[in-house]
Figure 1 (cartoon, rainbow, N blue to C red):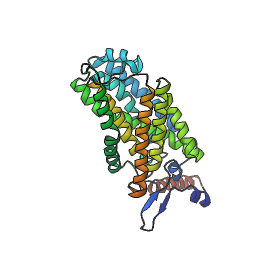
Figure 2: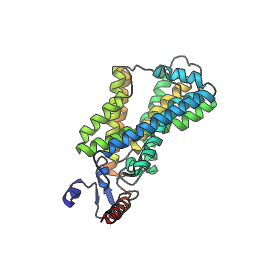
Figure 3: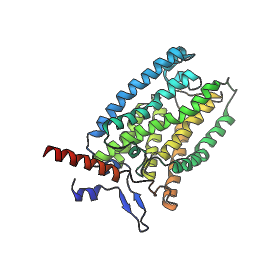
Figure 4: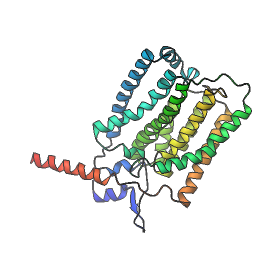
Length: 328
């Protein structure tokens, strides 16, 4: 890779204060000397294999040994209408089987060793809990509390609580992991892959959004709602240069729905209405605007946690040099 190309594609610069900042999340993979255009495809395929194996083994074992496992498995086959995140077996199958996508991606990165998992987390040297919790606090105010209050006020007769004690615990643990796993795949692996190929954030957002929509078999309003949410979460990733902000809003959205449904206040439905599409789009748009204002005014998303590119590139080039010397 020539010096001219590196200067053009670099995603880092240094401010006057000497603080390294990151310009672009989707081009971050190109900072690694090991980057090749085909490697995201290999990573995705290998992660898919790990995911299929792990999720199927998890589902099989749960259906055989966990109380209610067979019933939960039959419900799982009915789709969203039979969605169960409220019993022990149901939470493992419906949430755990998706959360294992994160483990699958981690195993794929270990096998391929093309770049560390931290490079998917953010363009700042890994997952930043300080950013995540700040964004999570914003999401509680912008999303979770308004939706919960409106739903509770507008709810009719309360249905019986679906949660078992163990189901509530597992849902609370696996629900956020399921959301984060989806972020690593759709706004991490796939978004970065397309972005690094095209160097065009609009194309990357559109493709990531379409793939995200394809995994949610709702009616037209539901699909459009998922598409709007997916696009706005991509924009949140671009603004914050990482997955923490999109994970925060994804978690608050899903967990609010899980809790309201689990306690018999609302119900997860396959079909959405126009009102839900407008409401969700407004909430996510307000969230993205807040992130943009904060990024410009307070610089929450500027400081780099650590440099995970330089040490990786040094090791990669050293190994490459050893191989070259051995072949001389």
